[in-house]
Image 1 (tube, helix red, strand yellow):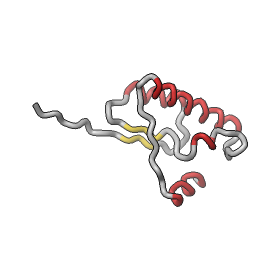
Image 2: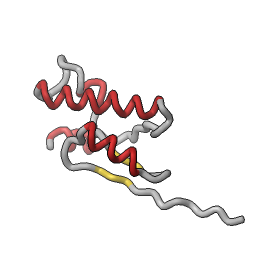
Image 3: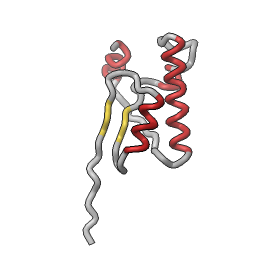
Image 4: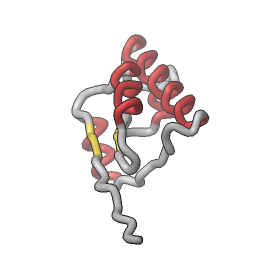
Length: 95
């Protein structure tokens, strides 16, 4: 029996993703689909002392991170990270 592979789909957002948008993506995602829900160092980006974000966007990012972790604990998603070059990381933080 031939088992084909499911084509994967990667979604990269150009603006901060909301918690609601993340949940909607999880609900409709197919196996193999990928979502870049944050680019940066999430643990530092939500920590008030190190974050360059204002309070409201930082709180929204923290909620998004918590929701992603909760979805992973429930077995709905696998959280992975991709190492970016220092140049790419600096460019994405400058945007």
